[in-house]
Length: 93
Image (cartoon, rainbow, N blue to C red):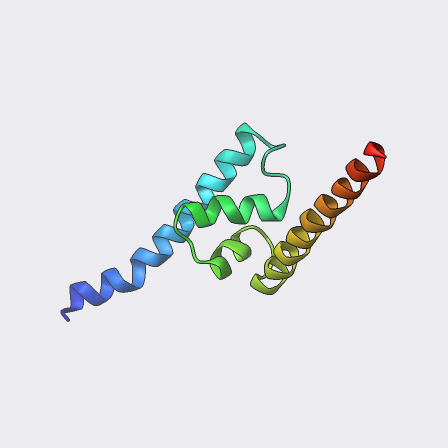
């Protein structure tokens, strides 16, 4: 590995994270309602190629809290679906 390669290896991730943050700022300026939640911001940043830990940090959170929020959101969806099936079955009677 040459000196130039090690310089690129050092600075390219920094530049990438900075550009991702700028893209997030631009996206939230254009459509603030769409990117109001931290999970929406993290999903956007992960779509740009950032790892979850970096995306969570750029969104103003931590990787662990994003993991827990995703878990809770998935549980809420499953619980809501079960409840709607019960309501549908009760209304048929």
